Amino acid sequence: MATLPVVVVAVGHDDDALDACLAGLDAGTPPGTPVWLADDARIGPRGADIVRRWLASTPLQADYTCRQRSIGEVAHLDDVLRACGDADVAVLAADAIPLPGWLDALATCFACDAAIATATPWCNAGEAAAWPRIGEINPVPDAPARLARACQQMPPLYPELPAAIGHAVLLRGNARRKAGGLDASSYASWYAALTDLSMRMAGLGWRNALCETAFVARGGEGGPADGDMDALAVRWPAWHSRLAAFLMEDPLHRCRQSLAQRFAALEQAPAQPSLFGDPLPATPAQGPTAEPVAGDPTAPPQERAAQPEGSAS
Image (tube, rainbow, N blue to C red; front, side, top):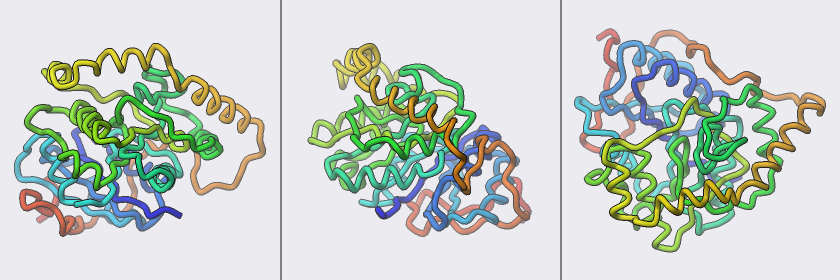
């Protein structure tokens, strides 16, 4: 079994989405996996309560850190990734819901091909990695355990993507460091900064791959901030046409069709015992109220382990 990476979740304003994300992490991620909830001073009182209760009950090795003042999405994530050194890191969107087996599949992808710098799973709203229809915001899957089993049956070919996609991505630590990390001075969104990083790593000979054996659901797509697409066009003049050609030509059509066939076939198959049930988690995290644990000791100086806003002193 491949060594599991650190999971980073940059928490945001959507409390309900964060609640579902954390429940999905518990259901679909091996116990003891290190998880870092990194807050760029964005969480509110209700979100802080969700995090506090989750930290008290999760089987994962979880830490939470909060900044005193926001420094922006890209600069925040760049600091977090730099604090992880050369370790491989899975960055999960705070409104994403990982399906069972997602992290094992991503780690196996890296173990199978040392040239892969980014591994992106399928997503119902994943642009070039969208399923069942490319480039569309498809509905959140209503049978996640069955879809996860279908993904696990896929042959691991790890085809090329134009760039990694922000719903969930495993980043190879040494490739990220050699490429220089995220460019917070040029981009304001994770969407654009991740695209830029992917292109720079590809220019150094690394690959941006689809991990077709993993799936992470999301309610909607991430997107660029104002000015980000212009900045990408200046630095990477061929990027927009390359992405458009990929979406129109759809080189992953057979792969996507294969997953759809396996998913449909499992509907008629006898139910398998599973720790993970359908549908996707949507209920508040359970557990007694408790003080949050201390932050990651490797966090950068700007980060501080903090009692979430709104908790008792």
